Image 1: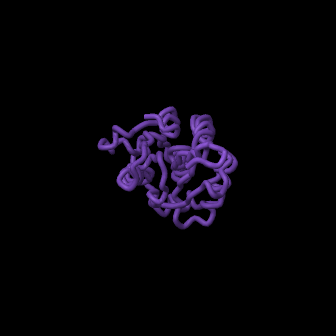
Image 2 (image 1 turned 90 degrees about the vertical axis):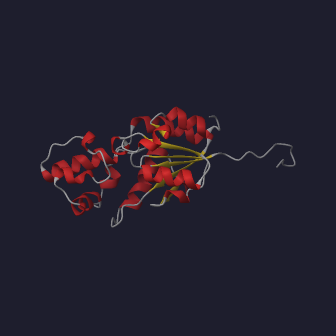
Length: 193
């Protein structure tokens, strides 16, 4: 409502951004580590599903050893377009970084929080570590995992985007939500359609 000075109080729109696959290139880091571990020469495009490690002759335990190692999470590079666009979104909306912790990793949560602070200026209260992304209650949400996008769309009325990556291309039912265009997220953050 209006305040005594006559200015209307405007609520900033809330934007939730998944981290791996949207802001940070988890797949490239994991592919490089698995190639080094197994001697394989597979490419990032070979990671075409969430359990693609079998293509390396690797098990989930092999992946866990790589991903849970101290420094791995902190070493994951940001996508250049995310570095350019997220600060613009942060100017017009309240951004929350909604990221799943890696179960069994002693270092993941602290390294991820530090990485988001370093790259995007995120404060601790702007980072939510949760496998269930529906706990983020906002106006806009972007994730590269089809299951998270489906669940969030059911739980919340806001704008939702499936960040287009090779590992989610089989989710044809979500093609109408598929993007990797930060302009669409910025427009939704401004309340535009």
